[in-house]
Image 1 (tube, rainbow, N blue to C red):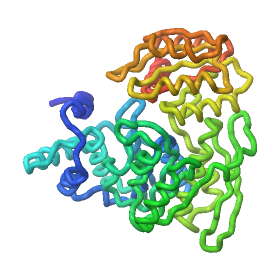
Image 2 (image 1 turned 180 degrees about the vertical axis):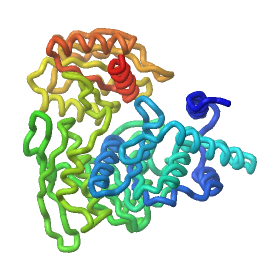
Image 3 (image 1 turned 90 degrees about the vertical axis):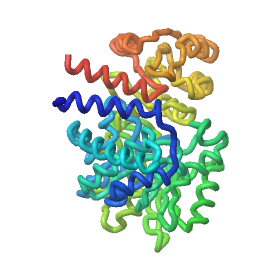
Image 4 (image 1 turned 135 degrees about the vertical axis):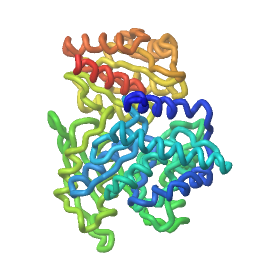
Length: 445
């Protein structure tokens, strides 16, 4: 008889091997497996979130406010930083290994039956989504917040019938799958908008807003825009950021209000993610939510890898595309303008890293030292290739260093933090996950 640890490891290994033999399938194929399991995705009220950047943070803000309101909240997000269990949470607590294994086996049995009936094996993300739906049905939280994996229209999560949808900021990423214009990408993200179901969205200055609004109109979906111009940074403290947000508090009367909020001092872009979450919770709960609960909830939000303080003077941020890198640069230049800044950078080979590096080097903030390292896996980018781009674009005063081993690179970064520098680790969520893991190991040494 296998022990729990061995059986759990085998289940995780099976899941991680799925991309080697299963391709993207159709929603009809996915629904076939869900029907065999009794349509678990319909058993708990769902909230559905798509967008290029900020999805996970909006999930976390909404969960924090719902929990503050006394609700029990499930959250299905991706990717995981260290353990696959992170993707399945209720009130911030991950699924246990035993439960994970139980749900995995239940889904695998359904997959074997479905395949015997002609269905195709679900891909990696579809399998995890089915597991999430089965687990949340068993646990019966008040709500489950689902983050799309990629895009929206064709994403596995788009079989949901949510109570509300949210679309965060949209930018150029995953163009090989979603299209190479902002309109095409917006169309994919807006695919989660459901008929006659409210959608809260970030109203950007580019063409994405028109795409969202057209799809909302066709589907007769009430749309609630959040505009960046409606958000004002009131005060940046040592540990927090205070902001105010002009909102149509009561859409029926047309009256406006300008409440103030406080979030932890992470990144400036988190103010817009918080505003999106606030509007979504207000729409969802109406008069059942108070301003005090909203304010306390967003202040309590914690989300790993998003301008997170890992150690004294060391921050990690999962920025891995051009809009996110620009937002990161804006945050560093405004929150840490007088520091000796050091950059630890790694990037996946399928990202537009030339453009990302150009943004980093042209930003108002100057990085005195830039350490280039790599991420694990098949999408590794050669260190010398990335470092050469920094040498082309970086300011003459910046010192460029190459260290392929991310553990050695992190050790080097720590020495600069000990000398009083401010260290920022960016470019890839895989890099963030590796550094988080190393931090955990250090704590247990």
